Image 1: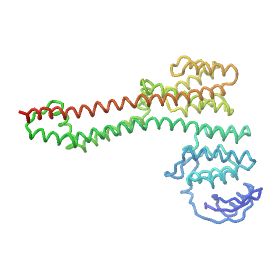
Image 2 (image 1 turned 90 degrees about the vertical axis):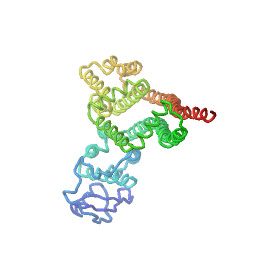
Image 3 (image 1 turned 30 degrees about the vertical axis):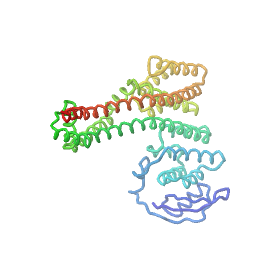
Image 4 (image 1 turned 90 degrees about the horizontal axis):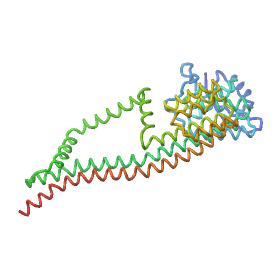
Amino acid sequence: MAIYSYKARNNSGELITGKLESSSEAEAINQLHQMQYIPIKISEETSVSAKEAPQPGVKMSQAGRVKVSDLMFFCINLSSMVSAGLPLMGALNVTADQLVNPYFSEVIRKVAQSVSQGVTFSDSLEKFPTIFSKFFVNMVRVGEMSGTMDNSLKTLAVYMEGQENLRQKVIGALIYPAILITAGIGVILLILTFVMPKFVQIFTRSGVPLPLPTRILYDLSVLIQQRWILFLFCLGAFIAAIKIGLQTKSGKDLWQRFLLKTPLFGPVTNNILIARFTRTLGSLLNSGVPLLQSLDILKGIIDNCVFSNIIQEVRVSVEKGEGVHKPLIKHKEFPKDVVYMISVGESAGKMGQMLNKAADFYENKVDYSIKGLVVFIEPVFISFLGVCVGGIMASVLLPMFDMIKTIRH
C-alpha cells in the first residue's frame, strides 16, 4: 500500500487537496471517482507495508491525542457542510484539511477512505473507539438512518460543550484548595527545616531547656533533614499504592461509594452524576435512539458503580414494561423531583424533553454547589494552616520567653 496526495475538483468546481491510501495510482484515481472528484494531480508520498498499516480499531499513533475542542470543531464544521448539501466524502476531506491536530486529521482521512469503500460513516468511526465513544457513534448512526446527520452532529457538539464546561467547573473548583494545601505544606516544611533548627541552636547555647512541643518539632525537623529520601520514597509508594488500587475494580468501586457518602463532596458528586445521567439519556432519546439501547450506552458513559447498577435495574424494569421511574424511587441518589419529571415525561411521551429540562436545572445546581463548596473550603483550609503555623511559632516562642528570663537574672 502507498499514500497518494491528490488535487481534484468536486462537482461545484472547488479545488480539493488531500491524501488517501491505495495499492496503485489507478486505484487511487478510481477512489477519487467514487468520491465524485475529478482528479487533477496525483503523486505517491510514502509507502506503507501491510505490517505497518493501521488495522481497524487500532490506534495509529500512541502519541496522538484528540481534545474535546477538536471533536467539537469536527462536528460543527461537518454539520455545516452536510446541511449545505455537500457530499459526505468531500466534507470529511475538507474538514481533515482544516483540523489543527495532525493525528486527528489523519484519523478523519482514514474514516473518509473507509466511507469511500462503501462502509457507513458510523461504522467507519467505530474503528477508532479511543476517539469516538459509543455515544458519539450511535448518535451518528441515528443521523444516518433518519437522514438528519447535520442535526445529530450539532447535538453532539452541544452535548460535548456542556460536558466539557461541567468538567472545567469541577477542575476549577479543585485548583484553589490544591494551591492552598501545597502552599501550606511548603510553609510548614520551610519553618521546620530552616527556621526551627537555628532557633534551637540559640536556645541550646544559652542553656535554656526546651519545652516538650519544641523538642517534638525539633526532632521531627532533624528526622526530615536526615531521612528526606525515605520520606519521599514513602510518599511515592503511598501515591502509587492508591493509584494501583483505584485501577482495580474493587478499589475503584470502594472509592466511588465513599465519595458519594462524604458530607461535603458527596452531594456535589451526586448532582454531577444526575446531570450527566439526564443530559445523556435525554440527548439519546431526542435523537431517536431506542430506550433500551440508550440505557446500554448510558451505562458505559456513567463511570460510577452505584449509578451503573441503578441503570441496570432500570433496564430490567423497562424490559418488564414497568417504566423508567419505578426503580428510581427506591434509590436515594435520585431526588424526588427528577423521578417525578421522568414519570411525567413517560406518561406524556416526552421523556427526552423532560430529561433535558432536569439536566439544565442540575447543571446550574452543580455550578452553585461548587461555588458554595469553594466558599466553605477556603476559610477551613486557611484556619487549619493558621493553626499549624501558629502552633509551630508558639513552640519557637515558648523557650524564647525562658531565655529572656534567664538573661534578666
